[in-house]
Amino acid sequence: MDFKTKLLTLRKQHHLTQEELAAKLFVTRTAISKWERGIGYPSLDSLIAISQHFHISINELLSSEEIVTLAKEDHNQTISSFSLFGFAILDLITLLVMFLPLFGDKTGEHVVSVSLLNYQESLFLTISYFIIFGVFGLLGVIEILLGILKFTKKLNVLLIFSIGINCISLLLFIASNQPYVSSILLLLMLGKLILLYKKIKTKHM
Image (cartoon, rainbow, N blue to C red; front, side, top):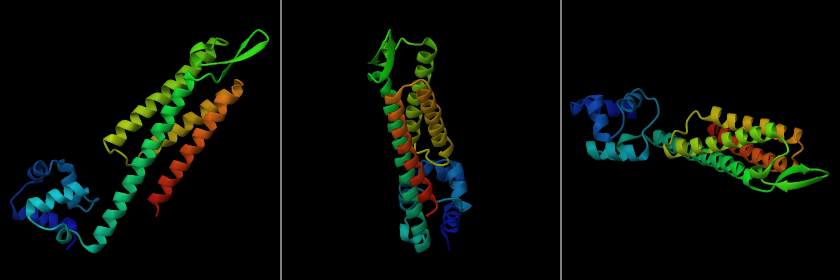
């Protein structure tokens, strides 16, 4: 008997609705419904809660194949969380670049290195730079929140969006002759590509 059938049987034997069981396990009714339909497995904490509530061991709840599957899913979840926090750190590092004296500001015949806060060569570029760094900061905060809340599934779109913003900003800084900032953005983008590659590779293992 597989896990979904065992869970359904145990719930009915104890005369519990999905809502009642969900309340006892501190999960949503949707989660119970998915588990009983064989869509994914509970987290380790939820499995422990199920075993304690029904007075049954985890080994009795799961077959050896299901334990392997659960371990693989947990590993993939860990990799996804690592990738998400990695992207968040890189995006927040990008935000910090605006405070460093890396921007070439032409004053007369001389070019001096200043932070973005002191950059005065072009109002249009200044505004564009601030918008770009603001987006990086916002992405970093969102990625950290999603990681804390463990919303790490199906986030490839957000990660690819982060890389896309990185590409656009890199082209802008290259076109506006900002070699130092461009070099840093290139390194950060390579870091993101490595994280995304590891995430995708792990998912298909």
